Each structure stands twice: as C-alpha cells, then as structure tokens.
Image 1: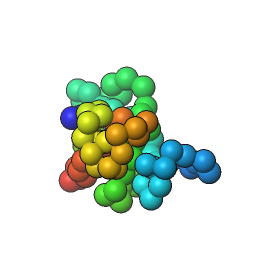
Image 2: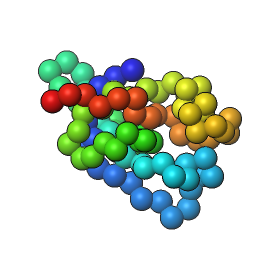
Image 3: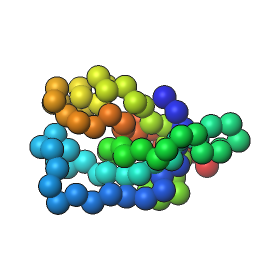
Image 4: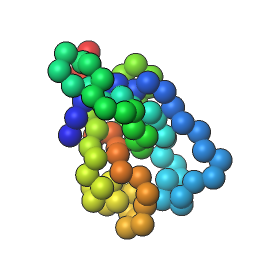
Length: 85
C-alpha cells in the first residue's frame, strides 16, 4: 500500500470486460514529504476520488482480481481509501 495523488483520469472506448463500470484514474505514487515516487500508475477507483485527491493504492494483483471478480484482469493497481485532508 502507498499514498498517491490523483493527477488525471483516463478514458477508454475499448477495454477488458473486467474493467466495465470502473473509473480509470492516473495516480502519482508519493514518497517522503509527498515527493513523487516512481512513474504515475493507471488505477481503478470505486471510491469516487477526483483530481487532486490523495488516496491509498495497492499493487496487489490478487486483491484487484478478487475485487473485479476476474482472474484474467490486466489491471494491477486500485484505490483502497481516501486520505483525509
């Protein structure tokens, strides 16, 4: 798990069936002092996060596959919670 800042959203006209109904966001993982930690990641979000929000993300593929109920889902990252301001 890692804190990330939502920096944008993604739109897809064609996507894997397991991603239907999920909002796709671009999240910048954050490290010490809220500095960027690595490349931005495409995540799925079911919490209603918006640009500028800080969220807790996970890269645990098993958790994501269980959440979308598809063993062949290509997504790896998802939001787990919103960080209070």
